[in-house]
Image (tube, rainbow, N blue to C red; front, side, top):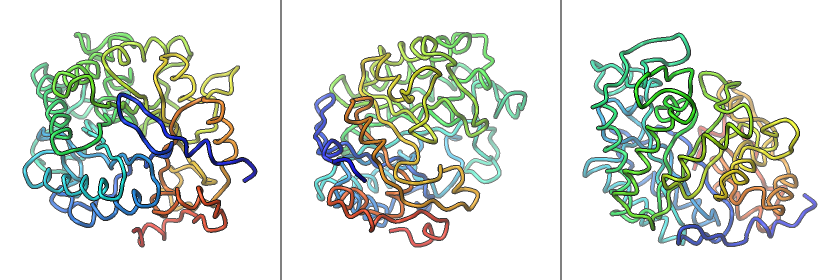
Length: 367
């Protein structure tokens, strides 16, 4: 580390929410909510990050109230009295430690495995019943099913505000339901929810509009999106800056306050001829603030962790240089914060030798 970290610890305000610094805890699924209810351990887990200078926490994905929104009974849901009471406890613990927190609202779509999920007798939902190009496993969602799902997202946003969350993030990335509507590889519809790149944004636009109807314009709303898909790491929604701008425009106009731009490696340029990453291009094209993410302070990208690969702790000079240039506004940290609740404090206090590597073994001792 040779650069000052002060730019990472400047306050930031968007849509009335002031964050103490630029560090965000990225949403990371842990499957530690038996019966889909977040318990006291979940609240303590998030509080530890808030106590150690994480400016904004975005929770693990939490599912909306439809019969087929989840693929894992140990992933928390965002509906029902018991689950919402659990989430209220999470909010109180994080706020008690001086932190800010948002839930990531989620529907897994066709990535649900019916044999392992609740309501195993029901088929999964997707725009065209495809898990990936050419792989059909269900009938396309009906218009009524689409409308019901939009309402479920709106209700989740309303509940988030009611129990005290500081805003919400919609999960529109990584090949899950919203992203399945975005991606031509999984959306072959010929009605108003399909068509060209702009046409395929309609499902998300109607979700955003419903969220705004339920919570008002003064409640922070983040949309996470990605070019890559878990079904195809090389996929791109937009091959050029012009196409990316066309894709983002209706989403921005519908009411997104900030875009969370998921990359596997934050330092990789998004398009030829420019060093800007996905968050940099998104900010340039929309004028909206952005969050960057992807292997921050670790040597290897996160897909490798699923294959048993470890990552060493690294410096963040390149990240700080980009932040100094205002290429993006916030920095989401995933695995480094997963294994070390004190990551942000260690960075602030320049305790670099104490930064922890990431390994599959570390996951067994998460705190």
